[in-house]
Length: 80
Image 1: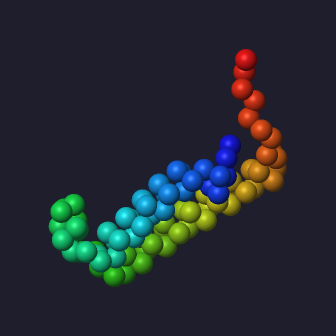
Image 2: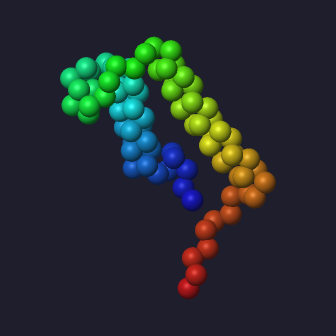
């Protein structure tokens, strides 16, 4: 499996989708929010959503690093 540094297409896709979610969540462009049919989100709930997204990212990253530590990083074997 390639890392994000090696897999540029995946890295750009993740960055683009994360920036789109943060842009819609922040309400930076109200016209875009109306186009998607989103309603105004209260500031307390926005912070809660951001905290959940950050915790999800950190948990996934931690599990990935823990599994790499426990199982190693052997190359993928392709059956012939």
